[in-house]
Length: 295
View 1 (cartoon, helix red, strand yellow):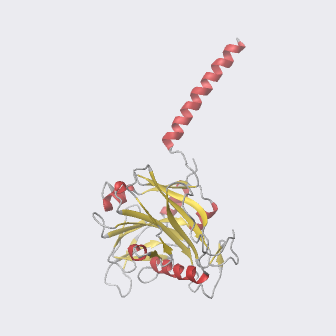
View 2 (cartoon, one colour):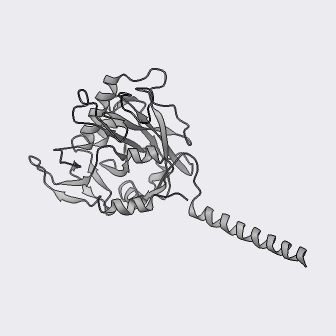
View 3 (cartoon, helix red, strand yellow):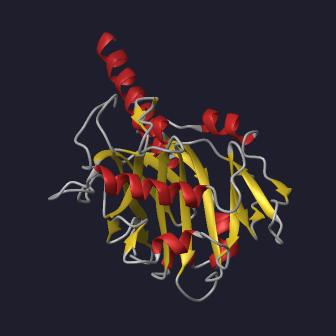
């Protein structure tokens, strides 16, 4: 199975969370390592257990998923989700999750620099799906204008840099580090919390219908299709249609909190073990038949 275990082992050192006090803030903030273009997964509850806390998790470079969409198992955050939203989080329809990411040059309206094939203000946004690549691409029908994408990208940057921006990091007010060192628990009263951008009619001022999917569907997995949306095609590799989302990959999560990324179903370890066992039995039978024929 294709996995990104080595990638996550390498990133573990980068995601160490340290307490810091941002100038002018009365609350202690936690700083999570962040690079432009990283994908952030946000979880929230609209009511009940955990309604006062958002869990945000950095799952790595958007370009990495663009170039290698079938990464398989990414991480298990079941303990964090259970601690925040209760052991029944996967069966709750009032718990939702979404993915967002952006590359932005600080002033993308005037600086269309390209990094890793993504021009400034290239947005990666999820859409609720029932299976792999089963949702409608963002911008279908009427593609988003450059101004719309740039405006939304500005909001994503504001979310990623909650509070006072720190070079190479994003800071969350009132946040507490999660024990795995990959994300943060954020008090929903914090300025620019995930819910401030996803609860309105159009998430991040652009995505009508929302970037989130919900749980409690009774299925084995919850799915989110990820789309790449260009503000300009100048310098974009791969290229596409400005303002029309192109499918990147599908993130899916099971009831244990294991997150995967892929463009089709990837058997879990237990399935592989069964397949290997069946193959071994078949091979043994073949050898017996072959031996008997020789005799």
